[in-house]
Amino acid sequence: MSVLRRYLDHNATCPPLDSVLAAMDKAAIHAFGNPSSLHWAGRAARQILDDAREEFATFIGAESGAIVFTSGGTEANNLAIHGWCSAQKPGRVITSAIEHPSILRPLECLETAGWEIIRLRPDKNGVVSAEDVVANINENTRLVALMAANNETGAIQPVAEVGAICREQGTAFLVDAVQALGKTDIDVREWNADFVSLSAHKIGGPRGVGALMVRRGLKINELTPGGGQERKRRSGTENVPGIAGFAAALGKVDFTALEPLRDGFEQKLHERLPDATVFSENVSRTANTSMFCVPGMEGETLLMQLDLAGFAVASGSACSSGEREPSHVLLAMGTTREQSRSSLRVSFGPSSTMDDAVALVDELVRIRERLMSMAGAL
Image 1 (cartoon, rainbow, N blue to C red):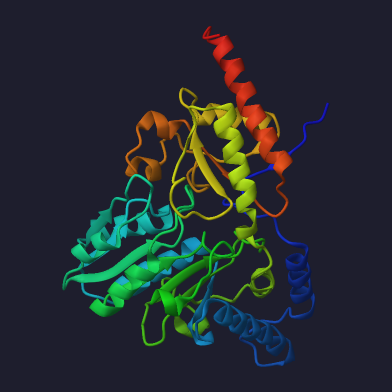
Image 2 (cartoon, one colour; image 1 turned 120 degrees about the vertical axis):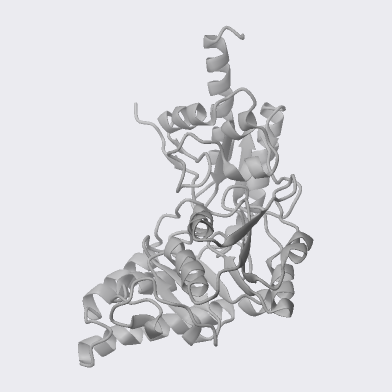
């Protein structure tokens, strides 16, 4: 008997939209030239890049020349951090303890090289305090890096407030907006952001494509010098079909419409498993995201059992879900290691239904009862 498969891991990646695949196919067939070439084939590819750059700029409130296409959010964050900091004298970088590894790992490299890295802890709801940022900015601060929305809990961070502080202090500000795209309004002017990182596959675009917004007047060093593409900020022949697909995905999936579904899921979860805890439940979150723990249940065990039942969910960041360590986000929020190990993340998408949500809760109850029975607890 076949198992019905239910995909509930859209924060890791959102399946590509039909319109995205069509745009990629068209670009691959009709704009196959190198966009740096001057002949007709190159000009056709260049036109797609120029059009996409304009679309991105309009969508996030930036100038078209500020958009740098990358291979994804990870490269965009690395380009912002290493590209900016390598052009500065060593100093202080302020970030949070709940950032994505593509922020935390590059900062670890800077720390090894003698930079001072301040990692601010969030409150128990997973939100970083803008006042903490103010208290830590000094004359040696070169960069503040903060995500707009957490990839695990969905908690919205005060980036506009922090951005205003950074602009007033003359400190560069990087916003990781990978999980915010499609889930909240993005306006780089309102955020006072100097750098903003984005990724295509979180909104139904192709994997391996991203973008970094670099505010006019700021110089970043290339990580991989070469042909000088992207205004000498990111060398390498651009992925024209992928970029066309990314542009085609902009604004197509409205994750904010999924809030009733998420809330319905959490209501059922509380009804059937009263001792379950939903993290960041009392603060503004991305509308499709729910991270929770079921006491006494290993998240990894639950993940495998749910997988066998056809459910695709996560135990944290997709970049580290294969590791056995508990969520660094939840630990930073003050949860115990046991709670962190018992956590799961559900992230709904355009194909998700209330039937999926109810079926997931039913399966969680069945798994818990079965495992408790095996352990002699029932």
